[in-house]
Image (cartoon, rainbow, N blue to C red):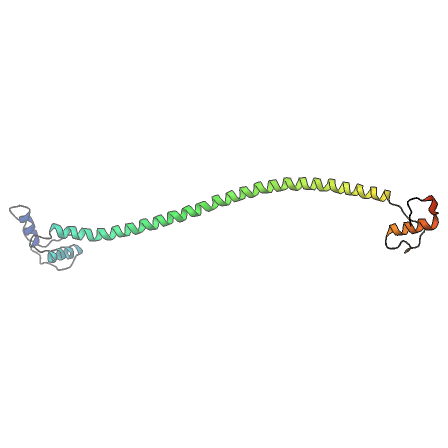
Length: 178
């Protein structure tokens, strides 16, 4: 890649830099807009107010415009990065919360298992006591054998009172007042 500079601009630049002699202009004919560097130098020359080239203010303005655009993009990227950071924090908090919930559930499960074991033992004790009470109740019951099926009546107490009055004299039973 070869760079060619405008032969008119070089002597002016050398004169502005305090050199006595400017380099000689090339003998080849000038090609307009044949290379990007030449286009840039032509643009700078056309934009320049003075024959010496662009001023410092123009150079600073040319630098500040892209710099402002870059700064705006950096700010936008920083905002996006902060949003991603907060989202990442939220996402990383979820597994921690889930782990805490799992630990809590395991503790509750352990306590529920212990309570279940205790309740089952109590239930077995109560079943044994109920069975014993039923057996005791059966042993204390009177069984009427040889009576007709419906002779007992509506309540056993009335049946027994009638039967006792009919079969045993009243004089021997002081508690029968009927």
